[in-house]
Length: 176
Image 1 (cartoon, rainbow, N blue to C red):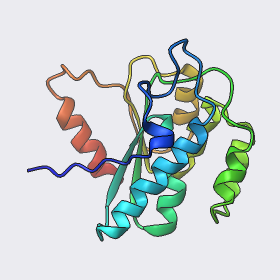
Image 2: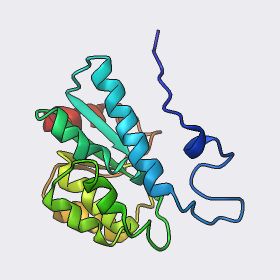
Image 3: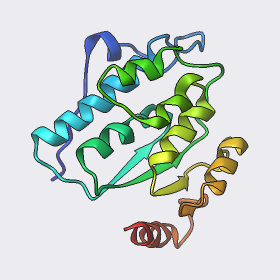
Image 4: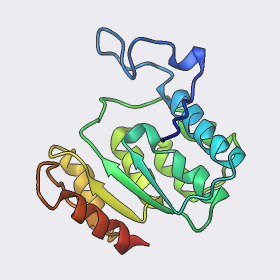
């Protein structure tokens, strides 16, 4: 029995597509959608009185979760998975101000003054206790940032590899 919770909002998530429209253009409110998602997840965790020990964030859309998470659960360990989910250009220029407007005062917000994919990854990795290359084709610049960060890193593991789960288990044990 696994409980599943959905975070929903008709204004942000009633579209047939997730991040881009039918022509491949990024939705202009992706920054607000990411903030709403992060806040919704964390409010749910608080209301259910869960105290996570490890939170694993997947992809750039979850990149703002750690800044909120560290304010609520100081001892939580954060793992970030990087994918080949980059986007061209930037999110809304006011992205950092929107997060700050929610009461977040953090020196790392200046990374988001230019809210590019690379900077979102750089931002989330500031809070990470470990980084996973979850795709064989993660952006090379982002991988370079991750490797230079000095935090435990799990290089890409093929899901077909016999030791796939063992490698992940060892990685989690190393960051706790």
